[in-house]
Length: 403
Image (cartoon, rainbow, N blue to C red; front, side, top):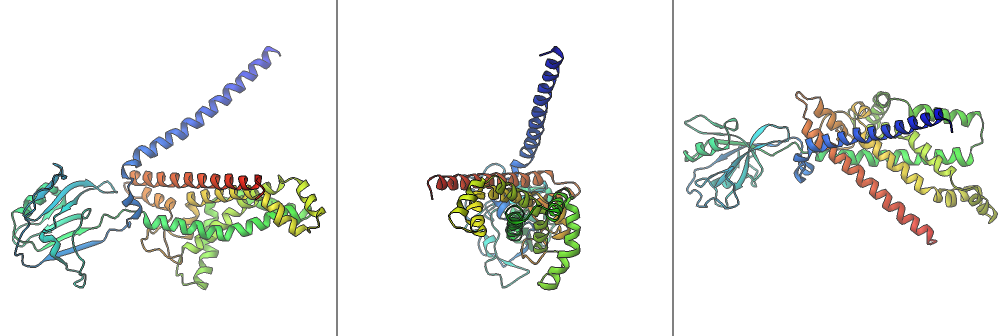
């Protein structure tokens, strides 16, 4: 080998190694950034809570007795406790990075357990609970105690009074329950629409269609669709699927159903290509053996070839789910950007990806919560990868055992 050839080979090796290291480094930095900014907000409440906080105005009748409960040992120095009212407040940060006052403890004999809902007198289960956010306490003959002054000042002001006119508090809010449910709805509906069409199209092209200009044209169109920006599909969804769902369903605007139909069109090229490649790698000996045993083409395709290509179809499904979870541009038009807590497939909502987009368009952008949702998306995709691998392994085990 000449010295010139050796130099060229060395440069190619260095370029290859450098490119691999560069890609790993970039992906690692992105991962570290997301984890660093988002891990502090990860908790079960984020997943189960509504995004929009519920606000309450609590009033109280004439008080005949106050609390006799001493400050519990589990409360820290950051929990400011009123022995008179049997309640503890602490300073905290909400999911939008704002300073708030949180109820950290309410004693059993606290007078606050006997409040009534000033906005709904029929609400008999009304009470203040741990985790509620206190906005203000309004007194009769002195200025209100506001959250901006901190938990210590609010407890001191409450201790000096024997009654108050109103306490304003709310649930924590900022949760992603609605967006998470919307994401699962979109995944399920999209796969219901896209998988049958995509799989049967791939079967037709690979097993039944003759190789001619027409099939070559279809394949060319499928190839072209893979390169179309998703926002173009979003405009198509807004122009086609939104009016269709409004006409034939209870929907009145962009909705989850129209978004799922739009995503189904986006995913068709991925599903068709992946399924067709899976069918191509099935040995022709399988087909010939099936036909020799008396099966016709249809029986051979669906009972032999399709079964052998199932792992590839599962891979196509996994790729589709990953695309659905990460898609945002098309859904902005086809579903909307309104974060909802009450979810209907005929109404507007946001998936987790669109929720991130909405958080990043705020002023200022909520990077922490957006990073937390990103972690949840990554965890979901990882879980689905592991699930598909587990299913594939069990399936291969059954095949090898002749099941």
